[in-house]
Image (cartoon, rainbow, N blue to C red; front, side):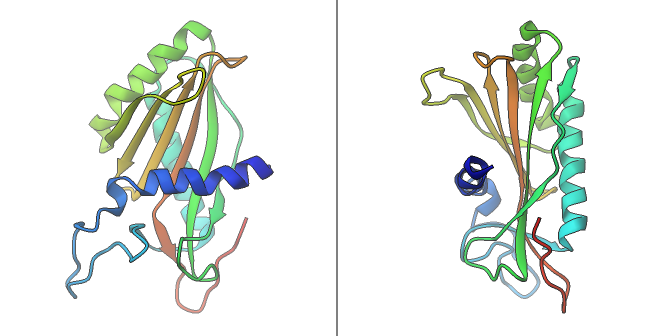
Length: 184
């Protein structure tokens, strides 16, 4: 678990460093940008639990696009502080999970389906290619501005068993007035 805690800030930086934090993003009626000075786009106002449920639905939608038989790991989203914001009033949701194809030969087609189908469902692929690891895993990073979410997908062919490792991350939420973030 401690490796996950250490890895989450790196992944959050990677994901929210994409088009989700573009300071040229839309401006509101008051002339302010919907991304903060820390560069993480606002995801709006929500409780931690409701935002967690929304991220699970985002993950489920990605799962539906995989297009090959297999199983997903059983994991729940977690809460992470927003960089530079009060951790009692602002938060991001992250949901790390894995997909294990029924057949190892289906791992490549699963990643290819995601590469083709994510853009058809509002996702913009901002990075695709081998990582710097010894295994040269294929990595895809995509953002969905409408869902205020990003996903980092790693195709791990040399793992036993082979899998897709996915990290879905939200933009920065603020809790409703008078409430505090429920950290889980």
